[in-house]
Image 1 (tube, rainbow, N blue to C red):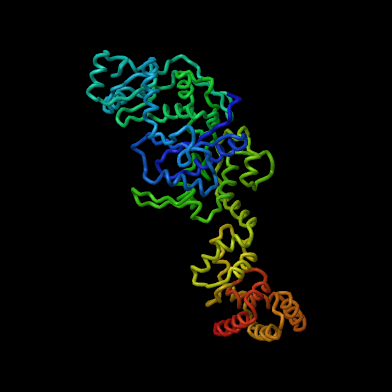
Image 2: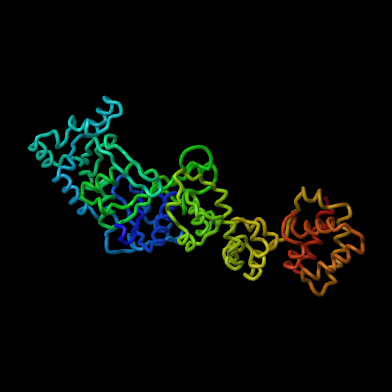
Length: 507
């Protein structure tokens, strides 16, 4: 097995939107495959027909395209091990179900849901296993003729795996080390249902992993309890030598309190738990997504990579290629990783800083236009250059930058009371004359001329500049004053000062 090419898979069920925890699992599989020169397979596990949600599969595919996580083969891609959608592999699974039945390693059970419910009511902690199977209606207890008659009548049944008690099952987990489980605690899991002629997760998962030559199964901690059964199934088919190595990842935990991260946590604390916006066709509910909230896909990937994995260095900002080079699955934590949403916001801010002004301006331009402003890309880029270090999301630019494009129609009362003195109007009228006389309206020329005037008059620099800012911006925010006035130009700067003097003099 060690000589085989590394092959991993991500196999979501189309039962709804892709949770951010699933994205992290897929990311770790991707990084592992790329780090070892292996293949990353995309499989859809849709054997639970009752839980199928229209649009979920397309959503999952779109999410990975946005994130930049690419598969080598699978649904929508193709490959030599298809089909990759489990609902299209019925005949394959049936062969393996029949094989287990023929070899006496599984049996047919006719117990109805009502009969099982009565049994659970009669026996506390009832489990369908070696201690109870001989009291139930199955092919181990019924005469062969009766079993055949029930099959001929198309009576619904399930196929259960026959777990023998008294065994120690050893699982060598890459992250958690050796895990030992006694077979006595396992129930005879259902492997196949005649109602929809589809296998359950357990059988389909094992058969597909074997036939698709999967060498490593990297999945969430919640699947660890199923690992002993999967080991037994590999043994039952005689595939122990090609059984993949397991690595069970730590859970993503709530930002506060106990338990794993859920949609309710995001709703309560105001952050998405899905990569893209999800519209539930059944309920009409709309769930927010990271893309629509203004996140960069690179920031989401970088943030998730460090939730439960430690590169062993102080580095925090990684490109996808850098993550591939640094990734070592053995450095994944055994304990859960708390979902620090604010840290994720920090990552998005860092990516804004690392992107060029032109890139951010291209994203900001539609927001400017949607606010009724027709402005050139050159000027929008200039504003971005001055202001992008103050935001974590591009959508936050407009509230901070709107004064560059639209003159203030009102003046913040708190700032006015604090910054507009009884002599401010007189000083601003003098400032108009100083600025109007300038042939060069660059920031440097303004600073020199205004500085000389303030020194000559003996004015306080803070008084002048605070009133100047209130005139141009309408409140006490923004970059350096000369950056603002140089951007606005002489005509607009003087017009704003004059209007402010007129309005503020009335208060």
